[in-house]
Amino acid sequence: MSHSTTNTSDVLDLDSLLNTDELELRQRVRDFADQRIRPNIARWYEDAVFPRELPAELGELGVLGMHLEGYGCPGRTAVEYGLAAMELEAGDSGIRTFVSVQGSLAMTAIHRWGSEDQKLEWLPRMAAGEVVGSFALTEPTAGSDPSSMASFARRDGEGSDAGWVLDGSKRWIGLASIADVMVVWANTEDGIRGFLIPAGTPGVTVTPIGSKLSMRASIQCDVEFDGVRLGPEALLPGADGLRGPFTCLNEARYGIAWGAMGAARDCYESALEYARSRMQFGKPLASYQLTQEKLVNMHLEIQKGTMLALHLGRLKDAGRLRPEQISAGKLNNVREAIAIAREARTILGGNGITLDYPPLRHANNLESVRTYEGTDEVHLLVLGNHLTGIPAFRG
Ligand SMILES: Cc1cc2nc3c(=O)[nH]c(=O)nc-3n(C[C@H](O)[C@H](O)[C@H](O)COP(=O)(O)OP(=O)(O)OC[C@H]3O[C@@H](n4cnc5c(N)ncnc54)[C@H](O)[C@@H]3O)c2cc1C
Image 1 (cartoon, rainbow, N blue to C red):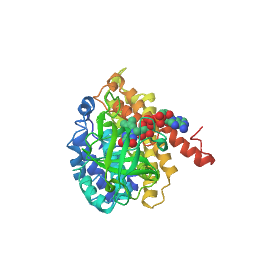
Image 2: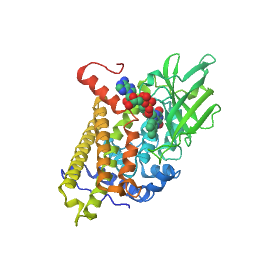
Image 3: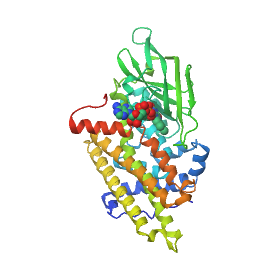
């Protein structure tokens, strides 16, 4: 059963903290989620389909690379980007994931670290959704610790027109099987560098990962690089070391702090609607104190998490957002969203385990969200380091 998000309750009146542009943008993305995602998502999820027509529609909506300026990018604020992530993830985390991979990861890498030619070649078409990008950092043996990556690009020739030969493998690469261009991070003699690899480059093999119980309406792939020859123009000239990919990851993590609250809100709203109409022991479930406690606790955490995301957004727009603050937002909001999704599922009883209702789909998706862009443990360690001054990543 689908339900509308228009009856969102807002006890703390957080909407009063948003300006007219922000409210208008949110409504537009909410309408898109209601019309394009909500009616179809159960089928896409069950069939494990990422709808190929969505990138162009999301480009038209203006949410691809929306926080970036110039080169056909929408140039919206961080808060607007967050609100869009929230509404899209209320539809499904897999759709918000596409927008994050395209805009926060692949486009940010090109916008921040690319040459003028690279920006002109890729960004306008990526903003329009005509071209899909992917971002390949994780490897089969290098996840939380990307500094241990084994992919290696060696110099091919000498002088300024020397190219590269890339060998290695990547895992969990979003959209890789449909991507027109892949941002690939690899070690070189000079440390970690980024490369742009167009689809169809010889020596690249992409295999979608099947049997997923999470993020089913989205694609992740294994990628192999076997003696891949790249010209000098493939290098992202500005990226040097792990700061290259980490800058992009911070953009995506920020969006997740908002997005997770969208998934949580969708779960809460479906549980609230169900509890009002489902009769047991002669009364609606919503009339029982135990149910009201669940709904109140969910609502409070959603409001607190949304306020946190908005605070991060205002800091980001003021140019003052720090990495440990992003960790606080990503850790807290995804952790609370999973708890809310599971609690909402209990209110739906047996019906809650079906795809007719969103909570278990969201809960399953959020297992991926808590894992990518830094696991809970990684963000705990970032915050632990910040509080104690002692890095504990290496035991
Ligand atoms: C749906 C999905 C989409 C993804 N999309 C992309 C993508 O587009 N591009 C990309 O490059 N990657 C992507 N990833 C990969 C993702 O970023 C990694 O899965 C993540 O970084 C964790 O790495 P790992 O899975 O190898 O787990 P590991 O790093 O092996 O971690 C396993 C467990 O050990 C814990 N752990 C690790 N180190 C420590 C420590 N020092 N102390 C305590 N605990 C620790 C972790 O927190 C985790 O609980 C995606 C993953 C998923 C599931």
